Length: 107
Image (cartoon, helix red, strand yellow):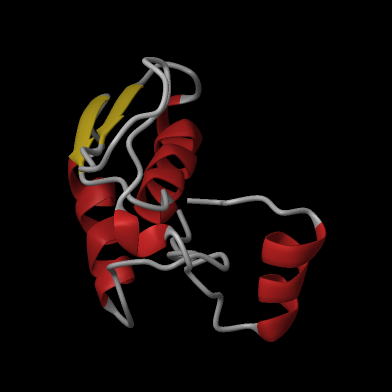
């Protein structure tokens, strides 16, 4: 199976060859149950689920957990970290589109 770690356009903790090393581990062990602690923007989550779907179809279970501090306005709101409040994309067009045109906080 051909593996290529995709970074999409979001930030990822796995830079350079480390994404490929990570996918190599998935290929070696082929887990059907997977727990990721620290999902953040979901790049590794997406790569993990894409790979596990290729290997197992719908017969796998992925759980991703991320805990952020902060204050909630409503009981059903997620807590958002303060450093994401004014986050800018490195690509100015994405910054303009997401933060000013559609006003969507992707984090």
